[in-house]
Length: 444
Image 1 (cartoon, rainbow, N blue to C red):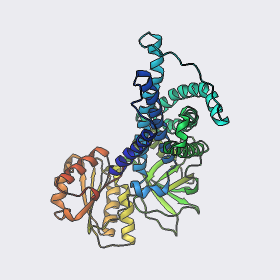
Image 2 (image 1 turned 180 degrees about the vertical axis):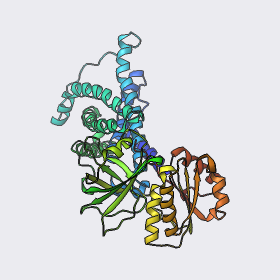
Image 3 (image 1 turned 90 degrees about the vertical axis):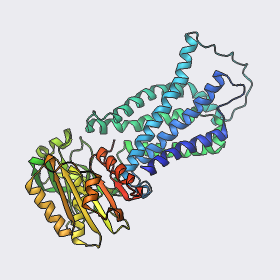
Image 4 (image 1 turned 45 degrees about the horizontal axis):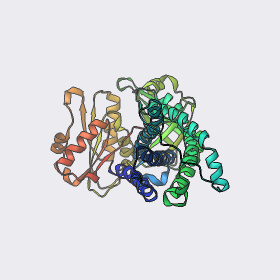
């Protein structure tokens, strides 16, 4: 989380610093309307700048993952940038629209316009000035649409399939707002660093928007395949799906995830891969729990032989570190990446000492037998805690079971609140922050 917080702050501070190098929030003479003009420019730069970076992150750039600790963290940064852009856009809209309302209500008196000076404008500058009225109208109405789309994206009660269908239209809104920004930004900015950065962001963001609208995101990382096996665990409300891929999959590390499409009308859904990669059989296993509309319908909708498309792999939850011990906590369906690692470790043993804690509210003997067998084959000590019978898992219980925890790293996958509580507990007892690894498996 520290990396994405620093990245968000860096984006906003860079835009602010470059804007201040070209303009000021304390114009002379300082009046309501002179401040309004400056702040409109500043809030516009922040809003379109943050939205442009969010658009670029939507491309899921693989090269950026190691620097931001995985696509799950990149999506969290994407979300925060969207919130920052919306906040800047609302203040931008209010200073523009609200001022006009206050003048109409008689609360403010607009200063008299100075006589227009005779100007000789270049062709580009003249065209931009002619476009101002259209750009203002486009920006206002697009702002309303974009605000609704962003709020829908942030509202967890909106089903995922509606989110995936509506969220792509933010790309169309972005193109309209990019036009609005290019026309209404001060012409003087284009000859200064803030303008150069804006030009790069607008061009990159526009390219990303077009790729989004044409469905080209991740196109070079997609492989087609078919479902070859389905195993249902009714007591756990879990479905295990085995897929065999055609050529095109480049392999994956245990702990990574992929976007899987089984129904084009539903769109792609992210699932952690629950199998180690074997290039000889091109087989992937996904374990899904009925937690929502889509996952609740999978056991009725999926059939053996059904074609699927898999995009990936993504993520940096790869168990790679220098510690001699590791503590794994897979809570509920969060056990999935650890299953993949168990299979990988059984095939490729290493010297690390590992304790795997699996707290679960539901019990299925067949599933537990398979997990126990996988742990034995991998040489991993399994700690199983089932429902109220075994009590809640916390930092104190982990430290009691693993006295050598101070030489270990901790890898967590499960409910975010539980992970945050464990992280705070272990850091309070001296675990270095960089040794706590958590998958933020929430794509919105």
